[in-house]
Image (cartoon, rainbow, N blue to C red; front, side, top):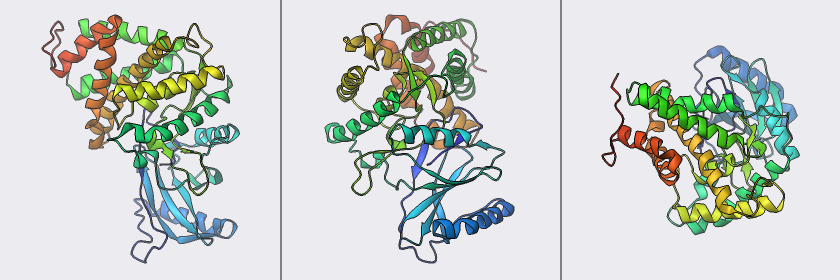
Length: 383
């Protein structure tokens, strides 16, 4: 759950942490399976060297979580009765430098993020503070939106603190090239690989013109630090007397549209809310963000409708990207559960495209691909 950047770009969501019990018995301890015995030996040696300094109990090492990349997370007890997280990230497949950099930026912004206690960069091991095993997602009552209002307000407060700390030239730019690369995942993986379609002719033209509009709209937004996967699965519930949510999965952070993270928060990869709740929370974000000067662009500071349109267009870019990523995770990486969530993103895409006349060609394309509403007008063949 506590991530570093993966070499297979486009990963979007972690799978969540696993619950654990401090009162482990002998059968629960040392349940870590290593595909590479040499890597196991290296990790055990590294932990033994850190044991005295950090009060570790290496024999308590066990699985904490895994996600869509090559990395995984292990949990180890300390003699004080607490626990820490061990990141296992093979250096030939993972680059953890962005994680370390963004963790420091989040600390400077006043956010509660994992602290890097030790890092063996050549071997790809990292020791981190443990933010617990309760995600915001685990605390959400999906059947009662208003019961979650306070949690979303906490998420918004963390997001605004993050955005207020923004400076240009610190993180990679969320520029035209990156936006286009992300959008290309939809035709390359969702349409071509998953739906077995030939993306050419009118279909190719429609996608190209739509993508051009999306990129232009989104790049016009003011730029801030963008978490890039700001959603309940990557936010951790407060522990003890602390009131702040913890923030994880931030290693892909960039400098880009202020609309991105609020769109990600309210149009979740694994959770769908009715629009009245989405509007409620987005308005609260808008009210707070404009008061601190984050939305000084055109008439956004006084016209929520103009701002909400920008959020929807930013969300559409994300939905197209994620549909492609989920197809890739399933078809290339064998992670079947991801593609099962693709209908959620297709629904997001259809809802947004139906709202704006400029996006109607995309709506017709999606509805024909999905076989919905009997809409015709595109002729494209199976591969």
